Length: 181
Image 1 (tube, rainbow, N blue to C red):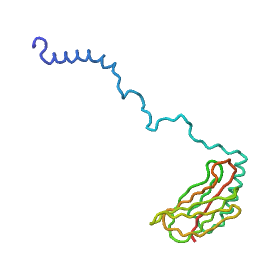
Image 2: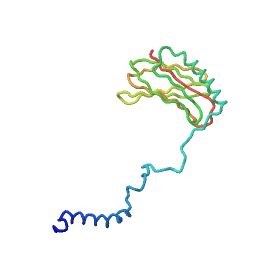
Image 3: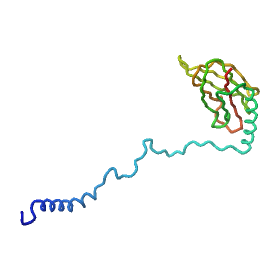
Image 4: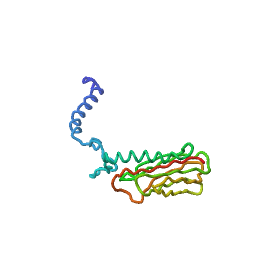
């Protein structure tokens, strides 16, 4: 083998021949990883997502006036609000949901009002050591309601609900303010 360049040359020649034979054969193989992007785990849905219809300009005008009246009604709440929010009380996207933190346990004033509908409900929730504490405020929209509630230190949540969900946009709004006594 020393005449042909020794064992090293023979090995290189064998490796080159193997590559020339196997190279074209391997290029024709299909690999699972080359299938492109994988579909998401959730899959795709043929249905479009839920969309909330846009409000009519006349309804927006009524809603703007109702928000101004709501702010006027809620302004009677004394002191700095630890939680204040308002939102639409009509149509498919009803209400609001907000949370805040009570720094000092004790009595707190909850002032709530609604404009543009006859009745609304606001739920207050608070996690306490024995479970959850719920307070339901039934609001007659012809007046502003103030109620004193005992709140523990920690998070408190408020949510506007209506008895009849859905329906058309009317411009109705509701809101609340929670202040320390």
